[in-house]
Length: 451
Image 1 (cartoon, one colour):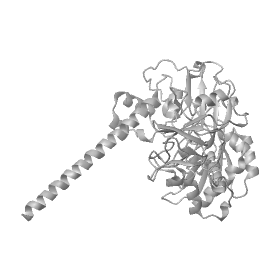
Image 2 (image 1 turned 180 degrees about the vertical axis):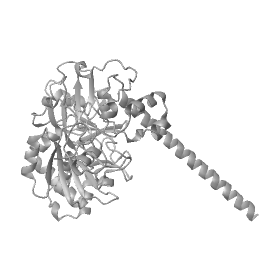
Image 3 (image 1 turned 120 degrees about the horizontal axis):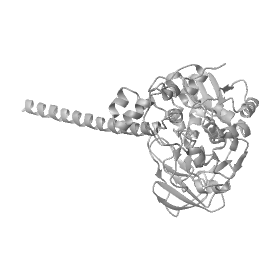
Image 4 (image 1 turned 90 degrees about the vertical axis):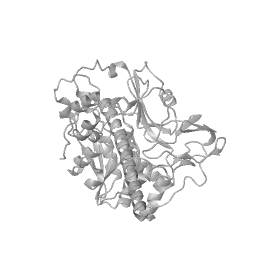
């Protein structure tokens, strides 16, 4: 029926906690904190000052860099302070939109260039968590013939995309058509795992003959771009390559919905759907929440903790990051907030690698995670990079999940990848210094010959 990627795992998905919780709109909090970097690329610079009054949807930060996404006010009110890379807005409770917003227009009458401009003006990024600026991703440097909307949502516990597809399929479908028009693709596919039959049925009712709704086998990490492209098209993205190298562009279904809002109503990205779940949450929910809302406020809206959590994660349990504080803001890439008790997070002591090979069998990228973790421990950065391809790791966590020795393989790999980037920057600086020295010597030689 469809192709399967190599490796992968079947963890308990925990989705039963929030799967049947309809999207609930959370009131805007009294104070929002909007980071100046909610995307891959250069941080934005504020365009407002402390004490200034702003309205919802007003651009409050931008950048001249090619790779960036503008930041917009998610509430109306006063700029309370700007510090630590964030703009704090005091909500005046009026929720007044910036002048002219929202409005209605016919996206079908717009050119691909006009649609791209609308997306860029809205500050849209990849909302599955990658946060790559959408307008940049829609300008591939190679020909593409297939658009894939990623509705797999393979991370355990997360159900925000599932509820979006079930409750608001028209937004997703409209966004898919806009994206296809921009890219000029011949085939458009909305791909989701077979554990979301209600979402698939809702999308099929909303879609026409121009959109294909494809159910894929439930296996983690089905939602990773390279795995998804292989499952849908049978094409492999080369190591070190990008989706466009396989003739594809992948966008999250939440991104598509935001694209529809921007192109049809001029709405910038000021809110998103986020799952708040885990066995420590009293009432798990899927929330439509303003950007800049704190984790604390979102958790309180879900009834708070039913018991003390051992960990609070940004994102899912496989690729999410543990948080030290609840006073961190929900951003454009916040797909979920998980509060898990020790019953779920208990890991056991880390032991020496027993060379069982389970991590190798589970790795969807065909790497040798056991060796990468050992090289990480030894800080053998060059060997990890040159002989074992550490930079090809997508940090999905399959290796750590199956390891009987309870080794923190992904953490070793993350640290090693950071060291590889630092080494590359150092090598680049040395090369530039050598080139400058050679140029200086060459110039000195010319002067001597002329004399």
